[in-house]
Length: 485
Image (cartoon, rainbow, N blue to C red; front, side, top):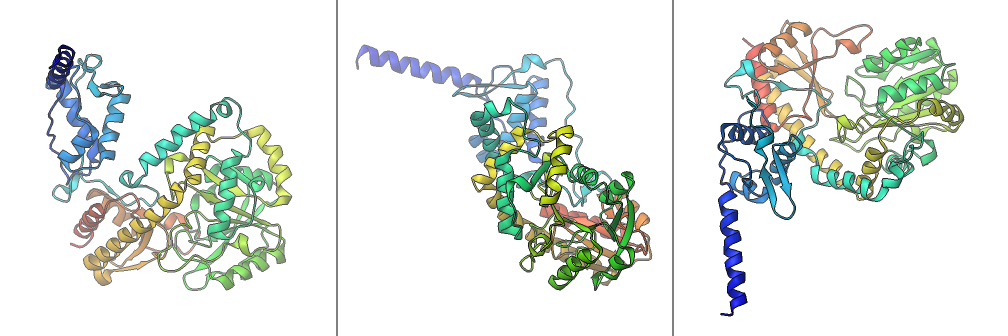
């Protein structure tokens, strides 16, 4: 063997030996019955061992692949753990080498770890939240979204250094226009799309644009937050009754003669019903008869489980009197806080003037990231995945409810969206049922706040989008133990 080859071998083995001194072989115990996410359990493990001195500064963490294989968890779980530790200064990254413990910055701290919750073995400490607006982090397309966020800075830095368009980034508005046409039949263009931080904010701006519309016809029951915004802005809210069987009673429109009508036709809140095609046509005619604008809030039309969604009101409208509203909070990420509305041509000049004062409220980087996410068809892939996942979760929830409660509940409102309604027939009121569930470690939600009249005595909402299948099963078992004694 030549001298230079020996030298290379000696150097290679020396590096391997040096690396072996610092690599760690870890075997954290992950409690899969706990409701603490696995990535948080990993964070606790590493932090505790750093503070105890078991993991010292300079030690190399296992690679994401090796640790995920060893623990039989996804690489995404390991990646989320490492990203959090990196952000908090517990570890540092060495290019083309890996992650290393950076213990010196935190050695004086005392870390207690996450105070977690467990399965029905310990119901008093369990928190299973049947909120309909949550998203399970394990279902989120983290890798694809991170790529889009990164690309938004790589390719649009010059754009990010300038003020955003008042209506929102044109690329995103154009993609939203394409999406609502393909999915909901809404024929529009980017110029008619306004992007705002939340549906509540968008609705507030719209109220200023429609300042002359003082009388608002609002579904009863209906979405309470929107109703309260109208009230806060000094609009007169008049109830438009919604019947369980007939839907919106159109006679109320002719008797009250509102200037503005707010409806959720694709998935009524909170009843979960959807407006028939014939009723939609009649609603459009009724609005024309009284000269009213219509706000169509299509807040979670992406999720239908039994039949294809019906055309939107906007797709059926012949007059320039309909405002279409949508959001990414239900279908993608609640914390993104990105909603949009599509304005008729007649309202564009007033909206353009108003937005010069209020400016754009959604970060341009987030808008550009979402545009990239949609353009690479990751949005379509995500929606298809979530439809499949939500169908499975809904099926499990319905089966568990039927098995646990039988004829003591009536289930409805489950044809669309990430929630169901249950009428509880146990001679207990809504408040008592919620309190008993909360004492057992389960959060369920009321419907009474959605009603202006004829409030049902014990109808509750159970969302399933933010829960695992195991959470759903455990949660219903806890509800049975709390309510049926």
